[in-house]
Length: 114
Length: 114
Image 1 (cartoon, rainbow over the protein chains, first blue to last red):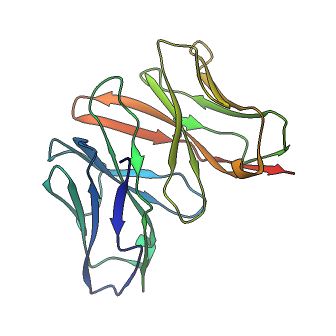
Image 2 (cartoon, rainbow over the protein chains, first blue to last red):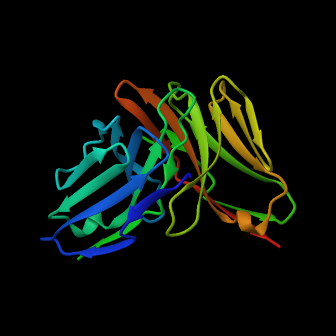
Image 3 (cartoon, rainbow over the protein chains, first blue to last red):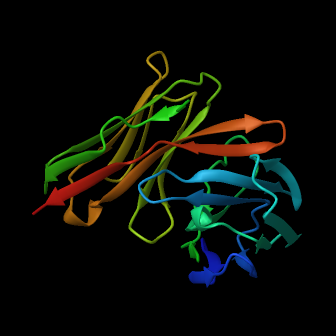
């Protein structure tokens, strides 16, 4: 099983709403990531969790709040977003270790902020 | 400053011929490189990787070449098939104390015509 599952696939939210994106993997990977991708741009790293602890935050605004409840789940809580936050949000996971850098991505959540 | 560069936004190739996608990087600390394929509205799919201790890695129709002195890598697809038409992202991996991050290039859109 090399699948990373993200829900929902599409999300439309108002600027005052609170919503959450969910990500799940059962590959035993201990590193999980959130990336953001705007149209015609490469994925940009937002957060890295390593062994369920937040290890990298790429200066992401606090209106994005990640959470890793266990080794298989990763959430991204959204609050008071702006229209410019509309993008494809990608979750990924990988093994840890020097020779195991391949990250496997989910299908993404297409977020529209209105 | 862009650390991973894919200078060709697009490439058109005929079916059966070789596709060569190029990638340059600036950070000499990168020690693992990956290629991903992406269809619209989907997450990137891992294709092939290479560590900095190698200069070539092959997997079926896909071969990645690494030239460390030139800070350049390339992906060769032979023979190209119409189903290979997608956006190809080059990514470089950096082992940081806090975790591993993938830095992506802007992507090259490959079109394979039959």
